[in-house]
Image (tube, rainbow, N blue to C red; front, side, top):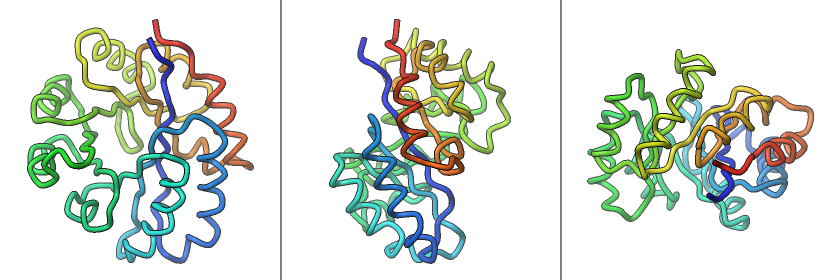
Length: 201
């Protein structure tokens, strides 16, 4: 089976953050095997001013750029897809009509994950920021999904020390947020995470 790849989640960004964040974003994408990145917008942020520069950086690195919550905004800004909560998957799939990626998160129960898959989600995510599940629960959910389902699974790692175990459990992508952006060097954190991407069984 192929190695897992990285999926980066940005902090909640406003246009004022871009001057400092964009160079770190570019360095992080260039530092390892990053497949995709999810842009989170701060409340009231000018989405075009935030997403536009990041979209250029991602495209240059052949990294898929997704936007949180809003499928129509993702299409309007030319992003590669959207990440929504499970109950919103069917609407997002219908809105984007298979032209862009639709990912599903906030999946508290196994039934929620299965429903998202049946609704057409291109991937499911377990353990993301704000989820109440523990690392052990995320590990168990990843192993269950990987054993039964074909749709890709994204597993959120709160720290770099969780990357190898989640990849070994069968995650197709390892999501990182604070472990990268709160590090002294985002690029070094991505390099360390890339080294932890164990080959799946």
